[in-house]
Length: 210
Image 1 (cartoon, rainbow, N blue to C red):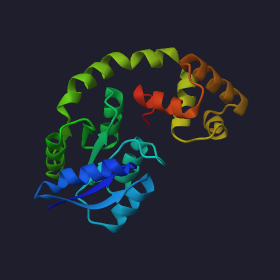
Image 2 (spheres, rainbow, N blue to C red):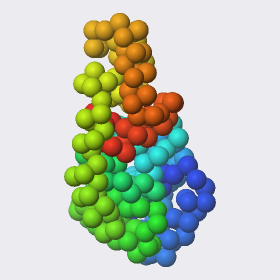
Image 3 (cartoon, rainbow, N blue to C red):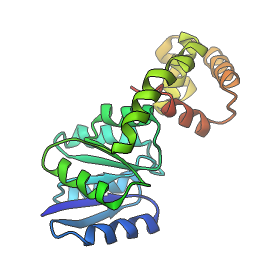
Image 4 (tube, helix red, strand yellow):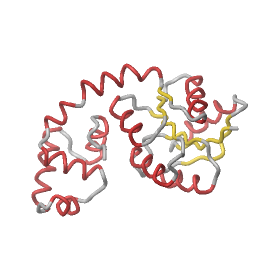
């Protein structure tokens, strides 16, 4: 029996996933989580064969949560289930340690196949993502990197890592005022005016990889 945790902050989505899994005879849901912290709590409490993880959890950047899980439980299989189908996001998730990626508009049969394949020790990619991932990774990652200076990229990576401007300044041996100026300039270049959209942009274009 494949024991699964469903990690998604939307109750309707969790309910639908449980209904899909209930149609099988070899997969069972042993726990649910609505935040990144709850995912870690469930893994400490339960015996789990696979984490079915939404990459957009409310309290933790998805890629960072994958890394945290793998740091504590290196062999823990993770299957990402997400509304995002951009190649860079898929690549970041896999690089962080996820063994597979399925989009939320996939057919139930695709999800079940992914769970079984990963639980058996394999890897799985939603067939609908293969062409998109190749196109996005090859053609979409150069332009954002070229638009930003080296310092601006360092500041962006620090922000995405959850560092304060003061921490970034200390790490880069710059004054907080200089770091603030770099942040202002990079946000102007990207036409972004808040940290949430900045994070989304960084993930979408593969700039948030640690």
